[in-house]
Length: 403
Image (spheres, rainbow, N blue to C red):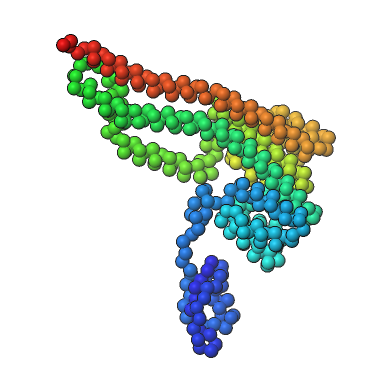
């Protein structure tokens, strides 16, 4: 924090300035030790940066960390010292990430190791990342570890995007369908209703029902809009609570076809994380803890935590995995083969590759099934509304007297 001060010097003159300290008390101590008599001291008021106000939009993204890791590895390979390499990196990229790098550089100046400085920012550089950095520092291969991390995170990001993409298209089509129906019932149907009223003839039940729905929508448009906004806000707030996110994650896994794609994508990421951690020399017990922390789906994260408990109680990794129904039996079998042959890392990476392929197949199946189904469903709903309206119009025209 920054504090603005007005102080008197030993010679009796007044000076103004800014001092950086963790609290007002610490700022006072700094000024006193400098020989100043404090006249006025107050915290600097400044607007928060965009990445502080809206972290989801302007905060550090996974891609920022990937680019940073690759670039830093290249600079280290070129023989540039870590401090200078970080200073160079601090000139580029997103403002939110540059702010983190500036603090990391300050910590290096105070004598901290790179991994220790990074550990202070778990929301930007997770424990998984820091553990691997520490391993690279200990074996003297930091640039190699950074390259491996970047490659790993790229594949991880690609898998996550594919899974999210399988949900994005159906959601977009559904939103488009709901919007089209809403516009027709709110604006189109009420406009045609006035024409029906002028003729005063009896309309078919389906048309009368459609008109009633249209009148309800048009008469309560603002209330419905506010209701939808309120529901969205409450849902977002609910998903930000641990129990809310866990319930949403649980329902995601139960969605027919889509749930399978989500689970397989998460299993691919989990086994890839485990393979990399075990290969880097992290103990199985610690690797499971880190993998649990980096798992997006809280239901799977709890399952991984249970596996860790089982391993801590003396079970083999494969046995602990087999004990939880969320993990497919094939996965525990392949892990068991890796344990028996002493090549757990390579088998975990094979499992990851297998479930990446399975996730892609599931995603293709999702898009292949939902695209025609949603298209037919949207067309049927809009077509029903159109046919109902136009058939009523034709019946009214047919009832007009001939001139």
